[in-house]
Image 1 (cartoon, rainbow, N blue to C red):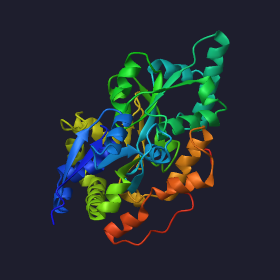
Image 2: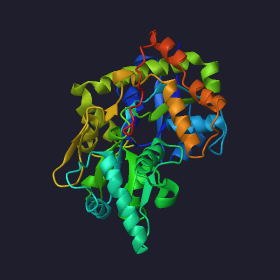
Image 3: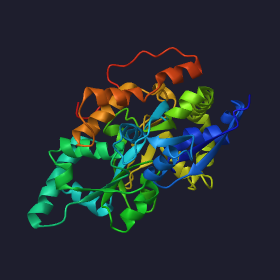
Image 4: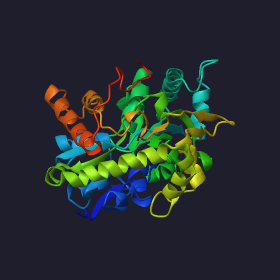
Length: 368
């Protein structure tokens, strides 16, 4: 039986690679269907179009899927997550001016890759600004229900700052983040690849931290589907899971990274130079400060380390962040509801796989 097509919305980010490669390299076709991709600008738009049935599935921030199902994000609709679209991929970038200002407060001998050292310097910077009567820094993040928001808050809180009082946090869609920095609307931001590298290449920003330096296995985007579709036509979603898992394995092969970057850089996808994208795939990022290159083999995880299998512990951690920052009720029932979105049963059935052995530490926070 032909499964016809599945409509999937995505935001132009490197971690949209799995559905893009599944569509454009042929893995969906080999599973008997085609993917119709729709490039969107903002997370609220992609959420709304998924809820309203314009999309069958979406590349979506994991916290938005949870918030939508719990009725915390303006719209309430049951969503499910049969697949994670990898882990990590964010970075914190500051304007050259703010970066230089932070360097002036950095303890002698402290490493710029140490979040505790940079957090202490940033806290000193904020206090110095306050004593002079200057404005606090404004940091951009992509959505209130986002790992970008929580990673910034984790870093700021560990430094003794109150994120909602000592700095300004502004919501900016990922494709507009560099423009916001250039026009002075934000002094820095946390966003996914490749927009940090775009800012560096334009001389507008300097990467302070890779997201993996803050959370080693940060749950990022998921493939979100309307629960009704999953219940009514599970074979369609199972075929999509198989195509995406095959795409993730293909992306992870170093021999395919140049081709992956070319596919992602195409018009109507990310529409950016392939070389810029490929640096993110290799986890070799120019920071824009002197000749520094920040390196992490785990900067973006697609299929490795069970990164595509939805982990309910990640959902519980994300719900805990929502509760911590006043976005969600702090209750066991809400935590259970968040975990239930992560459909490991669908994932395992689609692949005919047994559940993997779980690690003791599914996240790896820099403060732990």
